[in-house]
Amino acid sequence: MLNIHNIIRTRKNIIIPILRLSVSLFYKKKYLSGRHFDKSYSGWIWAIRGIWFQKILGFNRKIPWPCGVSCYISNPKYINFHPDDLNNFQSPGTYFQNFAGRIFLGHGCYIGPNVGIITANHSIKNLDEHEKAKDIIIGEKSWLGMNAVVMPGVVLGPHTIVGAGSIVTKSFPKGSVVLAGNPATIIRHLKDKPLNKLEIKS
Image 1: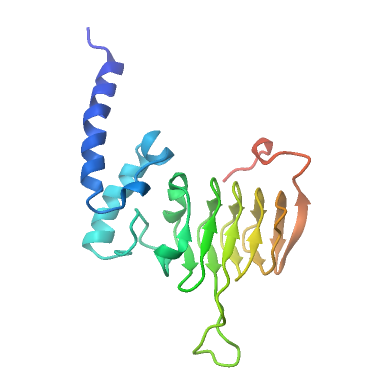
Image 2: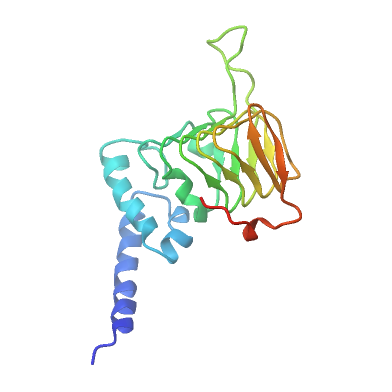
């Protein structure tokens, strides 16, 4: 009698190495690991889809990891993230403006659709030029809601939630807060109740 678990295990032992070898021809190997590859097939689906859209059709061709067609990244060399968080680059309409400044995404953060992270603004004296870029840091286990915007130089500490449509113009380095509004302000502290116990739907 066939054991279904043995069949699945055998297929994984054959299919995954073949996938890893094939996909690594198009992407850097360090991005082909983590929870989306080791614990599910979503990473492989993104990678296979990305080969067609990124490498053949040319959408986001220079990005060395699987990335959705509507995600924009100015400079992939200036963005730091954990491979577990590859899902943030599948979110539609995300805009990472980092041609001169760096963006650091903490492990376990979530970036919603149409979020903008901007490291350099236009100069108000000459719109053809940009102000000096300032790095942005998003703390681990943070969540930027849909249509939120993070401005140059902002540092958000761990467990920071930014409400949908909010514009973050200043830093909140201590973290464990919910921010909302324009400009974003603290509307709730999370210190007394750990983030992982909150009933928040992403």
